[in-house]
Length: 312
Image (cartoon, rainbow, N blue to C red; front, top):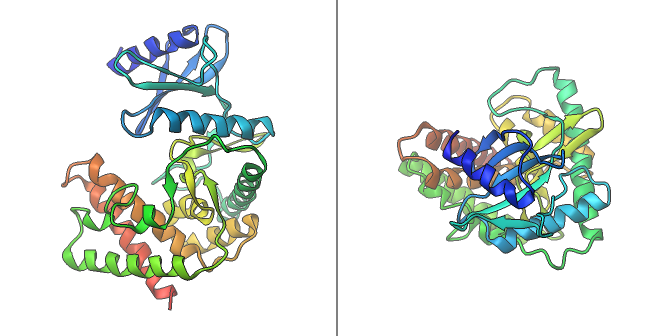
């Protein structure tokens, strides 16, 4: 039993304990376990990464998703502790939460070819576009006044200290490549400033394939850990980012925009913004010589070239 598994067992006592051993399914920002509580309920137990989200932000995420689930939106519902709380803390201060389990499979996986036709994949992304629109419209209809989450505004994406890190300082970038990203950064900031009517509000901010599940009931959205207040089209950019280097990007872009009900003209911008965020995100999470630094740097460069060529 690993240390993190021992912590999961300890944390589960706040929910009445476990009926069977926890199964680690992801250890990235948070360590996420599939668990069965002594009540018989299947759930996902999350050991939150220290320092990533505040206790108030974690509770706010759960308040939001509880409100969404109350309307029938397909997302996990928070499971309260025995004391009736949304979260609990381990003795060393690490925050823990538990949400309902959704028995479904991801629509895809980064770096793994889609198991089906391009037409079939496009259908999924059109459905995802519709579901993302429903996420935004439903959010605007429920009470979110108590929700306090990080900002994904222009400053958080392109300012001097972006939320996920100074992407132009990625150690895998050459000086000319840094200059290219700075040029794209300046152009993007100006475009955001000049574009009127961009819808803003609470967004998921991480609609990658692994966070969109599918089963006989339809699509489901999980893992709202990166959610915040920002541009609604950023959710579409995040949904498309894992396809940024692929020849089918334009097809999936059209499909998700058809579902969402928007034009495609701003998608090179929002796909690039997500690529830049990821290029900054990896800096603090891997050594300077780690191949992932270059992977995210090259993706950001690809997206910057595409954006600059399309934004005349």
